Image 1: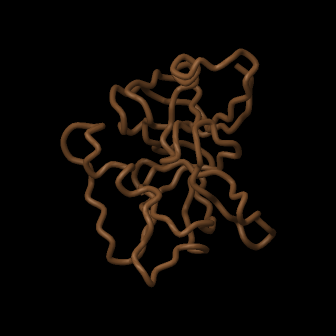
Image 2: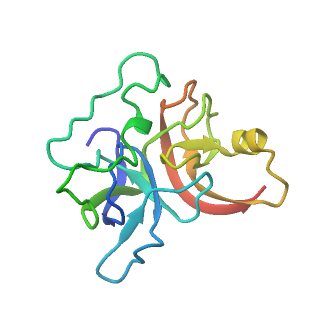
Length: 177
């Protein structure tokens, strides 16, 4: 698949929700992983703990059409907020369906802010699994010194708009502000 350079691993979805490609996923607290079953979940908030990787393809039920973004980035038209977290139509239930996550190497993520700087450590920005640079997160939210953050990796280039794609060098780590 174009734009991927690393290890892709299969996980099972822990919830009955769709997700837009390039969404960041975290470890599931609802369904803990075992030796045979590895579960992943959408993050619930910014700086979610336990980042696992980036979704490499759209996750949805059969015959669900996801239009590709056209026009102005951040317009809200056909971007992640319209897909990620939405519930499939009955009788579909996506719990336990396989997700393909990039867990090492480089791959695309979605910018959760209007600007990310090259080489910024990236953390999860929101419940849509978008990403934000560490310095922007600290500034925008008035984060106190000594706050723990959960990085997913580093931005390989800068971005200008919300929902821009950012090439991420995956390097999971936890640090303090």
